[in-house]
Image (cartoon, rainbow, N blue to C red):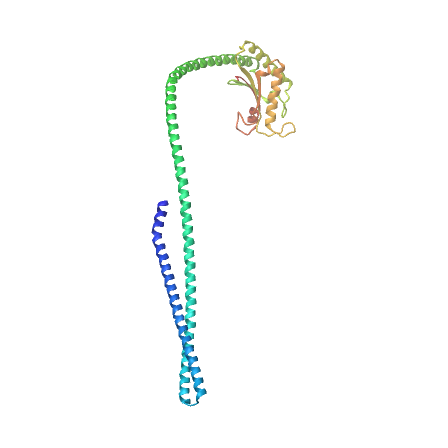
Length: 356
C-alpha cells in the first residue's frame, strides 16, 4: 500500500509543477500588462499636459493679440473652435484613462486572486511535506516492529528446538516406563482376578446365610396368612402388621417382627465380622393417596411403617448399623390393577438380607 501511495505521489508531482509554472506565467503576464498600462497612462497624461501647456500659451498669445488688436475675429473664432475640439479630445482621453485605471484595478484583483491560489498551493505543499514526514515516521516504527517480531521469531525457534529435545527425552522416558507399566498391568490383572474370586466367595457366603435366614423364617412364619416369600425377600401384607392408615405396629405385628429379630440374631452370630451385611426394611403403599397432618402423602406413611419395624428389631438387639429403612410409597407396585385385591397386595413390608 505504501508503494501504491508512493507511485501516486510520483504521478501527481509533474501536474503540480505544471500548475505552478502556469500560475507564474499568468502572474508575469498580468504584471507586464500592468506595467504597459502604467506606461501608456503616463504617456497619455504627458500628452494632455503638453496640450494644456500649448493651450495656455495660445490663450496667452490670443490675449496679447486681443489686447493689441481686435481684428481677425473670424480667424480667432476658428481657432477657438479648434481649441474646443482639442479640449473634447482631451476629455475623451481622460475617459480612456479612467477605463484603463478600471482595467488596471481588475488586473490587480486577478493578481491578488492568483497570489491567494499560490499561497493555497504552498500550504498544500506544506501539508504534503508533513504527511510525507508522518509516513516516514510510521515506516520507521513498522521497521522497528518488524525487527522486534523477527527477534521474537528467532526466540520462538530456539524454544521450539528446546521443546523438541524435551519431547525426545519424554518419549524415551515413556518407552522406558511402558515396559514397567505392562508388568504392573499384569500384576493388577492378577490382583483383580483374585479380588473377584474373594468377592464371589463373600457373596456365596452371604447367600448361604441368607438362605439359612429365609429358611428359618419359612419354618416359623411361612404358613401364616398375609406372609409370602418372593425370591430373596420376605413380604408382610400391611394388614398383618398395621391398622389402616397407621404406622403403629399391632401387638400381633410386634410379635411376628420379634420372632424375625430372634432368628436374625441367631444367624448374625454365625456370619463372619468382615462380611458386610444389612437387613433392609422396605415400606410400600397402594395408589390411594393419604393426606393427614401426620402423613401428608404416601411417602411419609411408607417411611414411617419401615421405621416402626426397624425400631422393634433394634429393641430385639439387632445393631442399628445392620438395619436400613426405606420408603417407596406407591411407586413399586406388585399389581398394576386398580382393585381392592391389587391394593391389598401392594400395601406391604418387605425384608431383604443383602450386602452394603
